[in-house]
Image 1 (spheres, rainbow, N blue to C red):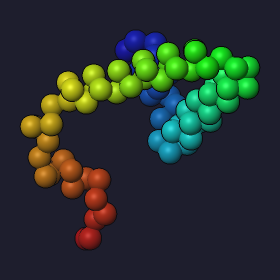
Image 2: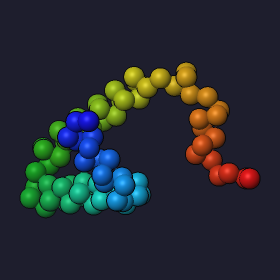
Image 3: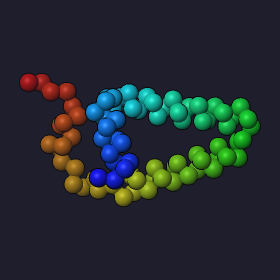
Length: 80
């Protein structure tokens, strides 16, 4: 197991996915606020452009044809 996967495995054992998401949200918020505060709008513009490119690449290469209803049902509330 590589180093970053090992670290993520240990984090998910300790913290829930929601806690990790809130942690990343706080980090990104601090970075964006500090870039605006120090008037580094050009850097913020470049980061926003790169993040949109990465998002579009992820969506573009996602294999959505193989997603079945059985896999989607795992995210829905269970009525059992």
